[in-house]
Image 1 (cartoon, rainbow, N blue to C red):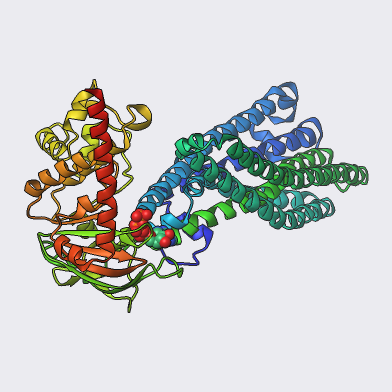
Image 2 (cartoon, rainbow, N blue to C red; image 1 turned 30 degrees about the vertical axis):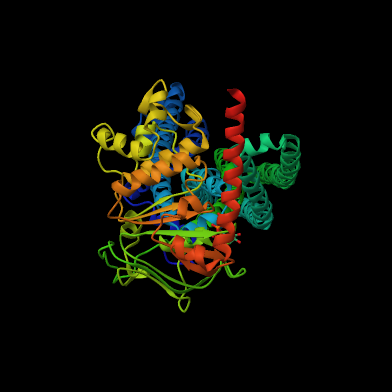
Length: 609
Ligand SMILES: Nc1ncnc2c1ncn2[C@@H]1O[C@H](COP(=O)(O)OP(=O)(O)OP(=O)(O)O)[C@@H](O)[C@H]1O
């Protein structure tokens, strides 16, 4: 989407397939206005030419003055018929406007969802989920009412004003000028308030976004909040934000009340001036009684539209803010493949060449990292917390892109920036340390990356679950593979979740598989069992294992040790032990701890005998 598009252009872009509904609504509303304006003319003719004696040809065609004087219900019925026709038009106008505006919002919602799904991971990291949801819901509602109510209403009111003024000027210029003076005052006054209301609404809208983010974060992290006894603190934090939020709405309410109050004053004054001056004009003979009545009718028909014009202009202020907030999302750049992006064979060596990386200009996370992973090998990465291990994975599947002159990452000799993104990610299976499972059955969760239906694919699902050492656990649930996970069902333990996530990745049969600290929540015995099963199951894939635990890595063909973004040691387990560096130290430390644990367990077992 091109930048700096006006708000109206953005809206028009999403009216595809619906323009005819907008057109029908516009035609119907013009018809309705026409019918509405006939009634005061019927009153004028009745007063001046039927009750009074003013000559008029048309009354001779419908029975003559005397006949109509005897049957006054006839002009009354004519007036009622036009009012009914105007009501019918109003009904169909609303129906077609609803079709047009809801359809446009649906188009916009579709685009927004697919766009957000294609935005880079870094964008999602920078924008709080609650705020994104608020833009997709509350802001969308504001735009919907702008489209469904305000936009055509605005055009309708302009028509009403023009027709009323034409008729009023044709009857009496002086009185019409008084009406115009008031209309101008209301419009100028509305425009002044417009900017104030817009400012206040923006502040309130942003505060709502912050409040939604806070609630979303708290409910998602409910376990942490409870575990650390943070409820009271979080409730206080919510109260504080909520008070701020309410204050902003009260401020907005104050401006709106002032706006409506002054508006009422203007309308009252306008009606009063017209009635008083109209009476003078009638007494002086410049206006007939019928014309005065029709004039007062037209003027009263004008009061509301003009006042609504003010309201609509101010509502448009809100809509402007909301469209801008939605536009900010639409303007964010999607992840797009370069034109020469390819789909090379992914069964090849992986190479990191002089890779330097930092997140948003903060301190360097990877400092000139170079290493090669042989195809079909198992490659271990050991490193302390924050040393940059997960960053390597983020860069490999391009959740973050490397800038130019920051080195390159090659798979089978092809720079990953030139590989189609979907293809790249499809061919790299990643198991995360804290996997996210969907609120679906275990079977559906494991099958999520497969194109085959979960029931048809059940044998493969069971196979990968066995490799991931979770098959027995799943059978232990009363509904087995049909057990629903998460909010609506069973809560899996951290280790069970990790193993379901391993199964979910294995089913993809990717040529490259990454385990990002994904065996941390399983015991060493299960860890060994899974790795043993993996050897046969993924023997052709290149496997990258990230871990703090040396027993998880020691059987890898090659291992690198990462410290503060730098590779400080490399080799296989035996050579690293011989180097007698950090790896050896960590190994000794972990072995002594494991020995202690084994001794303690043995002691407990011995004591039990
Ligand atoms: N999205 C991000 N934005 C900013 N900084 C980040 C982001 N992700 C990670 N970092 C920082 O980059 C550094 C490396 O993080 P990384 O997750 O790669 O470490 P790690 O070795 O995987 O750690 P752990 O073993 O604790 O998971 C850390 O200092 C971390 O704070």
